[in-house]
Image (cartoon, rainbow over all chains, first blue to last red):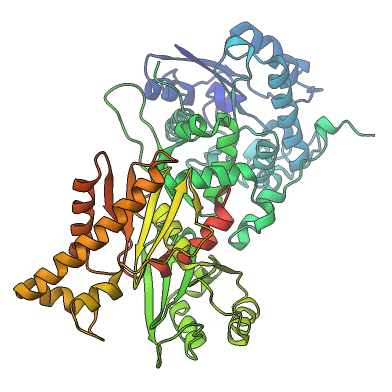
Length: 215
Length: 360
């Protein structure tokens, strides 16, 4: 049995586009569920998606618990041993209240990679496989969220390249979600059921491509 | 002093990608290691690459992704096995790189343009007005230009270089120097010069029957017979002159037909008992010679495979292989896969070997 930890924000939680934080796609429709079905029963998929989660930033409005870095270490330790950690974050770091550039958001991802490597929660105390996923770019029309995310859509287009540079320099896996899905126009930054489906299948194939000896 | 753990990373690998092939200096040893594996095995999985190179899955992932973006490597369809999860094979992108090969012989100059997996895109033959050594054909540059013109402009940036295969003792003439300058300044490409038989061995190792072979003996059967010993993918040659007079010149003499091509002679031999007898006589001499060389080599190293490289007809060469295997127990003799101008294809393989593989 191999374990995959999916560490993300509302788009890992499965929040339905255009609805509130309590409206969530069913387990099978969320990308970790789609991935679980594709990988089969020998893989154990853990969902850790929190709405509003940032990479390394305390949220002055929603609370410090939205800081991904605070929760990542206890989360990893709780679920260890872990074979694969998938990080899909960055969208919330683009909120106006943080005022961050794309390279700064990517450096936040870099911190999380560093923390995972330092803790080494893989089998036998090794570093697990780390897969950085760049979220698809936000759409221009964010409806009632446009004030919170002022300027964010433009910056969001730069995340994939900056994330990949981080992934390359820290020698971890990388996947650009925009190659298989896009944000839903209902709110401009959440994923539809179709997007979850495409992303789940693509990430399952990325996980397999890492190469695993026959168990 | 900033904490270097969290300093902005150096984006050199990615920043370099858009412009075609990366500069030689940027390609790391590990990248070459992965490309060597792909050149050798054709298609493989990231898992296999990790197993065989000892690199971690994450390192392989970074390298493969970078090679993918550079267009050198493509990802195949997921293959579902009977057991376990499906595997995703990686392979070289045939259109990822191109190379030009020039082989200058006694009577002709051969030119080929090949893709990244050794397919011939275009080729040309220049006949020398008077047979002889040290011949740089006056039409060589214009012919190379024409062959290169077969590539769309966008692909020209993906040409890895020009390989030049020269026979032993080729003079360092002013014509040759002028050609080198022309390649470097006008074409803007690097010129890789190598002995022609060694080049042919390199070609068989990268694109021919010797792809999967770590060790083998190569005999090049041209006008004369030449030999190379390949150990752990390294091509070795004897320090003493290694041309032996059991080659096609001898064959032509045996058939008493001066100036007739080997191919025509071979065709004649199919229909005439006299010729057939002469062919058998030559074959026996040649095989006896090859067998003696194999035995000499086997006294020192463990080689079980012989590759015969030649531009002569395949049937003729297969006959030599069959006879050699009868004579030498436990030996596998293979006809080289590069039938059309093996030295020129070998020449074209030189830029790949030098730029994309380890230990070339």
